[in-house]
Image (cartoon, rainbow over all chains, first blue to last red; front, side, top):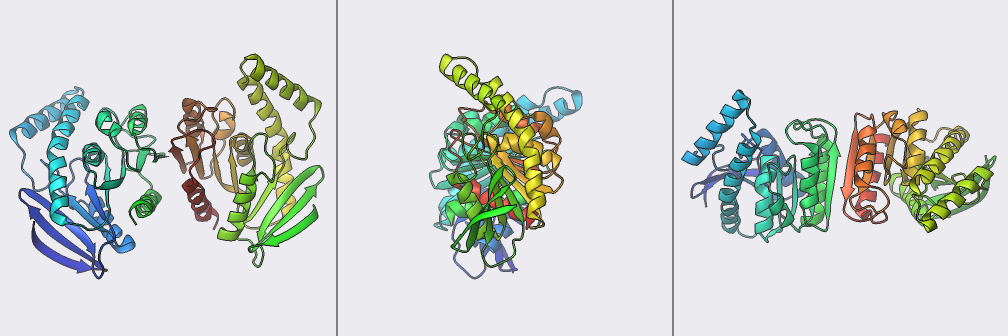
Length: 238
Length: 238
């Protein structure tokens, strides 16, 4: 793991890194050992320093004294697209403009990305070393890619996921998740049918799992849910 | 309103009262003016000092500095049954032992009780005077009787309800509720079908409403939801 830049402000140090082909960013408390580490999965079309990702990393470090790490998903941010990615993105655009059903293509894209990012995250965890108990936070694409990771990676002890459903995320992966989960659902999500989101929550095997549903569309999660998710992570990792 | 007894412990004063035919109990911080008032509706077969009701009243006073009040619902606790109550309870028992469907009878019972308790609560609010912003907390029967109250009583600014569905509580009353609502749902509730609980949440007109769903049966709401509900009430009434 090679750190390529470092800045500090408001008690938080932000460092960019690369691990092989994987570009990432690490937030840590400036003057203390981190109490835990949260892996942040960005949304579709976003990247490791999208505003919501950065804001969450800064808050986890500043308010909870946690470390937080984000990486670009394959075909996102600074990472190149393969021929497979290109084929799926082209097909997706064609369906979205031509009126076909984009969901099966998007689901195939998510499955491909999940298979690639799970070993990426495990390698990043290995390289970061012990920064305390590990959690995961990711919505939408970050949920679809996070469930297989949380299912596969025994170091992850709690997860905040949501804004996805059984068409775009794997219910089979969800069924392998057993750690405490906070699941966010937007009641009027224009991208995720309500029944599919409820079915994805239902599929989780975790004895402790809590669904939080709020009115509004995919991008309208109320601010108080961020505070509540922080408390959830603090309760399980702190 | 006539206060009939008073005890204080751990910073909370508990007073029993009667207002006409209505027996109630009031918890207040011992050494400070209350910052708000929460009306607590008990569950079916319970009463104003059932363990869960008392525990909630004590916590609201001790931890938030709120006043809390509970009254016996008609046909519950120290309140007599009328001939109508007796007829419905007899029919309910007959169906529960004889194999008939108790839900329509229970729904009729709830409708009758709601019509009676809404004016009771309004009279209690009048008699208590200004103790700060008013909230409501009630699960199961306390939800079914609380929704018409919250819909009818403009002094109530926020409500924590749940563990009920569209067969046992009125979706028409829910549709008249516009204040912020926290709605608790038990994913494996043996008394409330999941789809009916989701439909009751859906019926609420409140721009701010949040569903919290957890695994387990009707009586297995996790302890952390009580903390979360307290924060919700503090946020809206504090």
